[in-house]
Image 1 (cartoon, rainbow, N blue to C red):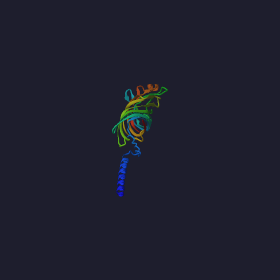
Image 2 (image 1 turned 135 degrees about the vertical axis):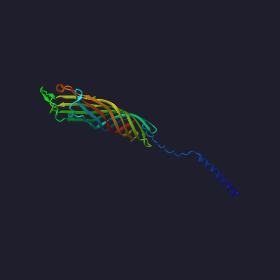
Image 3 (image 1 turned 90 degrees about the vertical axis):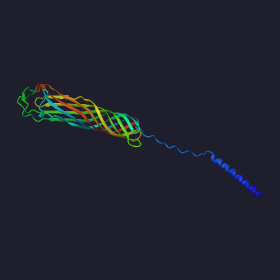
Image 4 (image 1 turned 30 degrees about the vertical axis):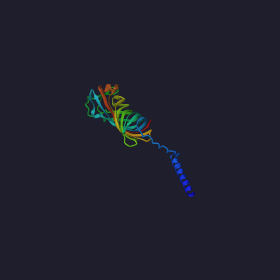
Length: 286
């Protein structure tokens, strides 16, 4: 009898314990949730930026010239037809722009303004005139009339591009999954200015002719580049631009001696402004 009573009590105790265990399993746990993992937003090129740039400028523009007497070429064997081409120098300045990214495509507009050291000087000294008709004479500063034979000409030309600016559209595409590497093409308006001069001097008479081309030019530019975002705010780029600012004509005016010794004589020149730019840039993106 006693054994049966003990066995029943044990069974009842086990039943009650199981019920409490089941209820405890349903109670909320006090274990802390895992810390959230921060996922930074993907980089985008959209936004304003400002920056600086520096590089080299290589001009290919030419300077051609002709000496005239009463509208016809004069002393062609003793006067140069070309005053040289090609200038090299440093270019550097700043830029600002805005990009808008849609998918892998990036559209933008950029304007820049740079100073340059591109300059070219050309000097020509003719050989003494020989074999000219004796009727070809020149009046010296003292008033003497002497043959042109034995005389000589000096020609000097100078061209300097002091500043250059552009306003361009940019169309690019991102080349990496993180959007940080972009290749782009660019083109738009170019404008620049500097100084230039053509001067011609006659040894015997002291005659002097001089003229200057217009200093400010407007044209176009076209190029391509690559840009990489080091951080979300700092980008670096390498860029090539070809620019063309057209050409200008120079007509020289003579001094008093030129009017007396060489009536109707003047020199003209044509200056062409174009070239290439290779530069690197650093931008801060807002």
